[in-house]
Image 1 (cartoon, rainbow, N blue to C red):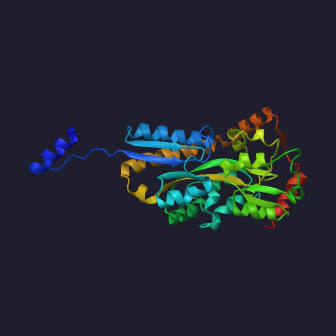
Image 2: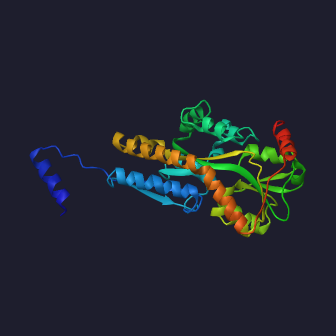
Length: 307
């Protein structure tokens, strides 16, 4: 018989109260990207901080590369309690919270200053979004910066909106789909983990993602040109099932929230360098990096103002 059982039996026999033992907590996190991606590395920072600060009372398990759920499945999986935590593209909540797509309105948040103000905890933009996500059964722990949206192609860059006409374009949100439709393109919703095969098989003609994803997914193997439009700000959110989260002790929640805040600040402060490193890696692997001219950007902005 285990010692704990002997102690429990003896205590019950004499009517004594049992001492409070620390409860082991396991937090499983689903991630669609590879662990080597900057979002994966950010989760590792969180894991190390939580496990160290909790003296091992909280164990964090990261399931990367969509091992458990694809990006589009994460909100429902976390909200239902099928898994404790998950990372999802913010736009995956657009069905319940249309306001999240403010981040994908073309060229609206087109500077780091604007993005930082919008994504600050409790800001007039982020605050209501975090609160609304609670209605899906999840609690936002932190936001992960992913950088600006770019376009991928083969053979030549996407210099102007007309270059999308009649082309199938990978998108990852409703407003981005409207953006493509407005120029006569055919938006195709494809999860991040399915991008490589979609480009390889020709399921779409044009890609849309963040440049860090080009590096982590080695998309230079299937696409050869990047057009640096930066037409939207890509954000991911790390969410926890609310029932599970609220069932944790106050001490455990504090450990995890402190680690979450540290992780959020770290990724936000480093995203510009992360993007610069990804562009360098793409160039080293033979990709052409095209920066639209000022006049070309004005054409894109003119389209965005009409959505």
